[in-house]
Length: 322
Image 1 (cartoon, rainbow, N blue to C red):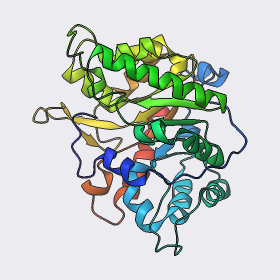
Image 2 (image 1 turned 90 degrees about the horizontal axis):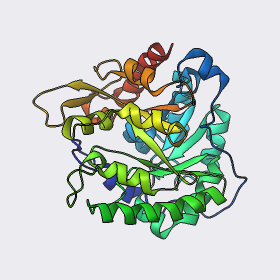
Image 3 (image 1 turned 90 degrees about the vertical axis):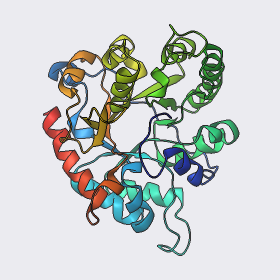
Image 4 (image 1 turned 30 degrees about the vertical axis):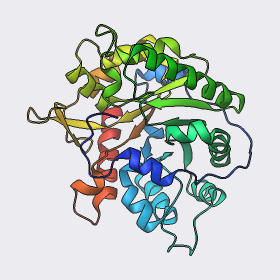
């Protein structure tokens, strides 16, 4: 995952929540990455009335308070799309673990929609159909992983990873879902065996655009640009807009003392060039913007802590997209 500076690593989180899905098929749903006349007319390809949140940002509140408290609060703030990072909460809340149908009812009761979920890449290898079942129970159109395609940073390693993703993506397509991969900075590094070849380019070239999609984490893409110069994050989206149904709208503040070049901060407190990014990706396709702040549970006093960051960041995103 590369260059993460937080006390609770996302890989550990995914491992901790692995295996919590149940195998029950439901009606399939279609994706949301089609071009819309509204986005073309406004010139803003990220609709402000469909802003989402990655629940990893408020993982402390999900665990301690539970979905029954957190989801209504997110709806009150104004979020409409929910991206999951596991489906569990403290068993002390209900005296048992919450079920996926119970989570789906909470979504429906609060006017929320499950837009995607981060699952461990190991689960895609060993538990794919159960993960697709869970996605369909929750009514989400996308399911993905926040893991790098491969830990073998060679051209052959990323080609092999692309072959795996093509198989998983075809299985997701057969169920009416879209499989996506979420980047960190490391994917933009150059291959160890071919220093002129960018790993992300190998993955894009060798994955089938009919079955494998991308969630661009804008912050980590700019960190990748800082660490491994020679590309613009917006260019990837502009060149293949339909492959990017989801964005992570994470902000960063420049910090020369940080090897990444930026610190993760609340949206509205950073200086990543979001206005230019939105302009440069073009208005042809609508993308769902999902707020994430990896550090929210740890960087702020509690309460309100991460939920306070979620509310302030929502306001800043609405202002950006107005």
